[in-house]
Figure (tube, one colour):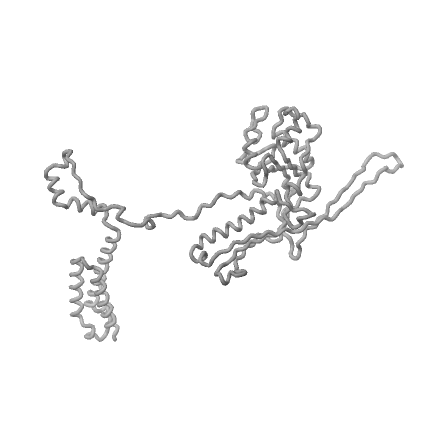
Amino acid sequence: MTELEKKAEKFQKEFDELKEQVKGNEGLKKAIDSLEEKFKDFDPKEIKQFNPKENEEFKSLDTALNDLKKQVDGMKKKEDEGMSVKDAVYEIISKPEFKEAFDRGEFKTQVGKTYELKTDTSDFIGDVTRSQVKPGANYPREQMLSVIPLFTTIPMEQDRNRIVWIEGSYTSNVGYVGEGAAIGADDTGAEEEKSREIAKISAKMPFTAEMFEDRSAFASRLQNKLQFNSQKFVNTNLINGDGNDATQKKHIYGLKTQGSTAYSTPTDLVGAYKFANIDDLATAIGVQADVYTPNYVFMNKLTIAKYSRQKDTTGQLVIREVNGQKILGGMTVVDSYAMDNDEMLAVDSNTLELWVKRNLEFKVGQEQDDLSTDKYTAVAFWRGQALVEGPDKAGNIYVADINAALIALDPDRT
């Protein structure tokens, strides 16, 4: 079979398909029949060399057939979409009874007359194609990672998984001495080796293969959530982690118990403030911190709200807004869900260290029966440890009960 004969056979098949599609539309059916008759008069066997570009008769038939196909497609589209409002209105005003009513002047009076408008969204069944989907997905808002950024990050070397540091002490007995005499007491010093184990955290989530194939965006969002919540775990435990040398050597050592000193009202400040407020407490904390300078104070949202409207004796708010930051006693207020109600933790950020053995690592693979169940498991890992060396704990002051601390500062409050 020649190339032209193949083309002719394809045209005949298209004629048959078009006639099937335009059943009920006599105009298009006649046009198709007429073109088919012209095509039958065109005998492809008489042409030895097939070149459609040079054969004008063949090209004319091809163009006419394509035009017919476009008309049929347009007719089908119109049937699918329904009549437009413009076409429906035109149909009404074209009706003889509408023209007769207009000629009688009925539209100039209050005579009631109704006509059926044959277009309505109710004629279309289905909501999907008329809906616009808002991109993305809205998940509950997560707390900010407000603690991690305040720590100095120290990467651990290869083949090291234990933090070791030296804490020293020195006693000075510098004093006056007479001529030719020796000082009575020697200066003394000591050093002690300290160590701490590295903590490891992990989280995992299973996914079906269908999830990756059919809802990859959802799977990606869940993986991001897995990673973020692993970071959030570290962020929270930097404050209230239960790591300790006796029973939880490989848990994160929290600031509340392992990186700070409990607040104790300086003796000379007891009773020094009348109607003591939280700003006075911040000043007392600074006195207790001595040579350290606390520059951040952690409280939860409820506690911040409770004291944010409190004023000093001059009528000024004690928690002030400065350049978009809440400031209390010269310290930046940090909102943290790790803090309980009526707690505050003032820290000198220069004392905070976060030793990281492995940054948050994310893996996706198959485990256990995942292969046979056509699933995958996403896993996150992190290794590291918080550290505030013993002497530096004096720069971080933990207040377990703000109200009790205020009463200790100003006993007349009761």
